[in-house]
Amino acid sequence: MERDAFTLRLMDALARIGDDGASPARVAREFNRRYPGKAVSLHAARKWLNGEALPAQDKLRVLAEWLAVTPEWLRFGDSGDGRGAHYQAREAGQGVDFDLARELGALSPAYQEAVRVLVKALRQGETSARGAKAKRA
Image (cartoon, rainbow, N blue to C red):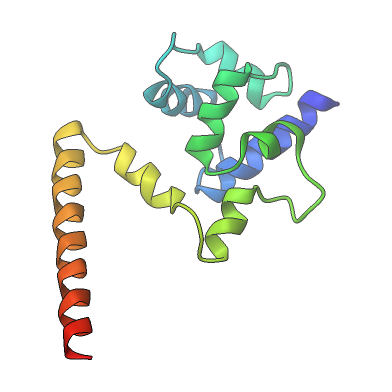
């Protein structure tokens, strides 16, 4: 029952990122792209999707980060609207844009560095614009 509930939350989180027909191969591949430890097998991903096993805590954290939900919600659920605190904080205009972070994480290291340089330049420009506006006021 506990594993089945986890699987339902996992499937829900996958659907939220546009993966309604989650396959063990895709889950294993996407998980392994993000996990620094030993890769999980197709068999392990299949067990997560079929309610036969729960991931270890370190793997659960990586899954939650990938799926932009809290590890607590993914593992235990909650009594609210079924969404993790990450979703709630973002809708309230707080916290990290996990969809953006996930997209950036999927880029090659060279492109990630290019985005990093661009963001730094944008922040400097924004700071300069605020300073100029404050001087005029």
